[in-house]
Length: 89
Image (cartoon, rainbow, N blue to C red; front, side, top):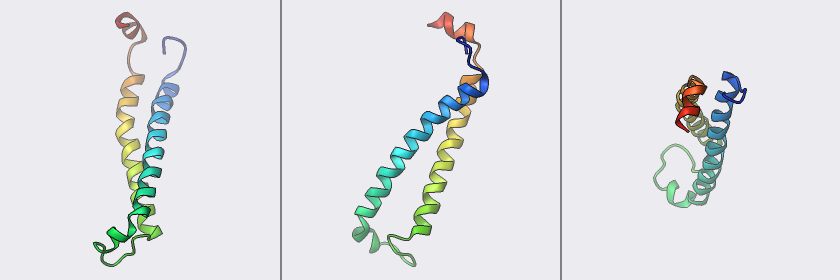
């Protein structure tokens, strides 16, 4: 913000970093889940290990929770006074 970024831009920068981390983690997690379907299928009742609806809902909830958790630090980062942050650096 000290270099001219507005509040929305700072929030977007923080949320973009969180989105990239969640996308990478979700991709790795989905690949691991699909790789371990034989082990998981013995523990599941009523759904298959590769049920696309269940995987989609779980992925969507995970992404929503991560973005909601990241919004508060993003909002806090955008509300910091630029002069105070420059003085502390």
